[in-house]
Length: 301
Image (cartoon, rainbow, N blue to C red; front, side):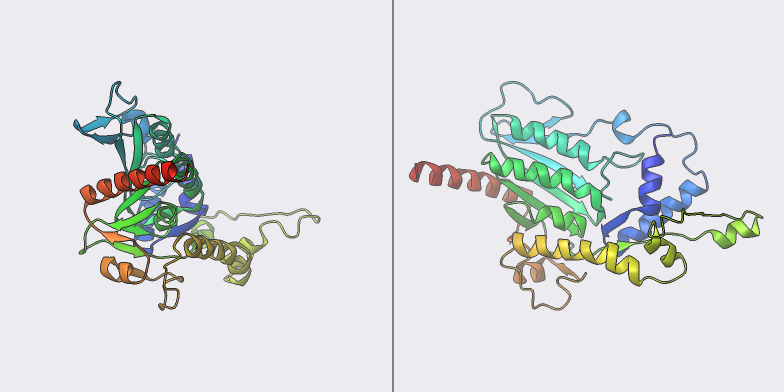
């Protein structure tokens, strides 16, 4: 069953995720454990290829797999990143590896000159970040600006957005940013299984005293080691990326680096985003950034 990856990630993964999305993952876990997904043998992309749009002087063109021939030069590709971010595709989500592969095709196309990411996500698994960051950096290295147009942009989604040239709130009502932090959750079913007459035994080699030690202590309710060795280093890495990528960030604002979220106006004031504007505004900005980079290139050549 191809949902094994989803089950493992939900039950054991480490997350850059907003707490409201964590509630959603808990419901999915319950459904999986109760065999609510019985009979499902495919992943979302098997039934519905990931699609995006390209915007040019000819209007918007939907793309499912191959970019049409003869598109105008200076075309912008627009990609949607929504919901829980997972590295691999699952029953209900496209994986960031799949999304990044589509973005890469656009980046490599000689007539697509800018990228817009429409982000509406509360974050997700930590290993989902790298595929998107890698392709954003590739686009920027090729002189193709990347702009994030966001509604909810929290935790792992915000981590990714900070690598873009600019971050925009697509509205000043619901758009929200932040939740810079890391969490991990697991469920202890020992009492349930014992009630059913099942007792689990975990036996480690005498030479493997440190194997799974943080988790074993956490099961006993001792969380210090798992925080210090597994979660705190990730939180430090998150904070470092944000402060380096967003030099205008006001780090003196309470909670800005420790998990607090901010609506668009406050996020703009605090240096978390660059502007507030709709999708058309973001597309125009992406093209303007491309134009400015070309002018600078030729002026300095």
